[in-house]
Each structure stands twice: as C-alpha cells, then as structure tokens.
Image (cartoon, rainbow, N blue to C red; front, side, top):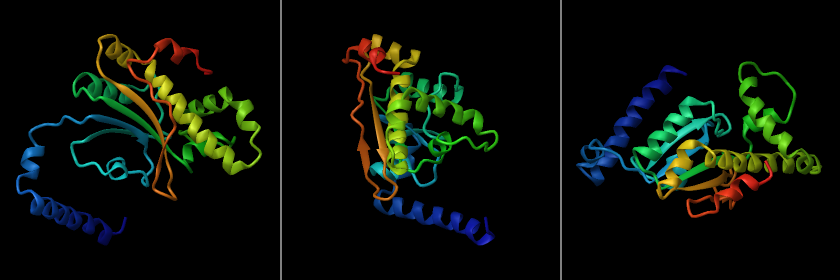
Length: 212
C-alpha cells in the first residue's frame, strides 16, 4: 500500500462523513444509539463483493460475516458467534448466504494444487464437490461447471445453516427467520436468487431429505 493511497483513505472518510451530515446532521448520533438490522449477510471475503453496496443498504441495515467462499461450518466459532448474536440478540428476520461467480476459494477446490494453510479450509468446499460429483463431472465446459459449483456451494451452506442449533432453536420458538441463497455476478453486478429459501413455516424434515 503506497503512502498516497493510505492518506487518501483518511481523506475519503472525511468526505464520506460530510456527505452523510449534509443529508442528515444527526446521522451519526442516531447510528450510535444502537442497531436493529433485519438482515444477516454471510458472504465471501472477496474485496469485489461489498454487502451493503450490492443491495443499496445503509449503515445499520446489514449485519455481516465474511470468509473465504462464504462457508457455514459447524466448527467455525467466529461464524457461529455472529449467527448467534444476529439471531438471538439482534433478532434478524433474514439470513442471506451470498456467493459469487469467479470465487477463488471454489476454484481452488476444483483442483489439486496445494496453496498453503487455506488448503484446510478448501477441503470443506471439496466436500461439496464430492456430494455433487456426478452432476458436476457431467458438465464438459469448465466455466459452466465452475459457475454451477459456485451455486451448489451456496445451496449447501444454506442447508447447513438450517441445521445449526441456533437456527433450529429459533424456529422451534416461533421466531420469524428466513434463509436465502444468492450468487452475485462480478461482471454484471446482479444477484441471482437460487430459490433455496428455507423458513420457519417450511416443513423442516424436507431440509434433511435433500440430497446432501
């Protein structure tokens, strides 16, 4: 990072603050009093996929967790802590798992090259490929197969999210909580709803009957 770029970050912040205050002089005072976002976003850490900007949300409207390839792992205490706080404290009504086409983590899981420490993380994505190997291997075009793998990975994360004790307990208590799976197109800026919405009025057994 060059010193000029670093300095520009501070200046950009000042300009952003001014733009907000010009619209509402009490913007930051109101924001500092608390948050009640209706949405938890579980997305990829990729710098090209900014959660708030994609959906045109303002500060305070989206609670965010990001990691490599938007994974929902039952051993990831960071993700589970964010989920627990979002569901049980903030009472979010929607959780979106959002992947993106061209995801480097998913791409790495399609090959056998060792990258380093991230190999341990990518192994979980490889499990998704194994579950859908026949369908994916039948796709001859590599780009099409890659895109399909991205979509299947998001769907599996939604299903895994539905099976967490946090979500299960929220549904059992009658809490309104809908889970969704999206994929973002880097080249278009458009999100694709994969149609895997799972809600507390769904038949929960159907979640477990899907082809994992």
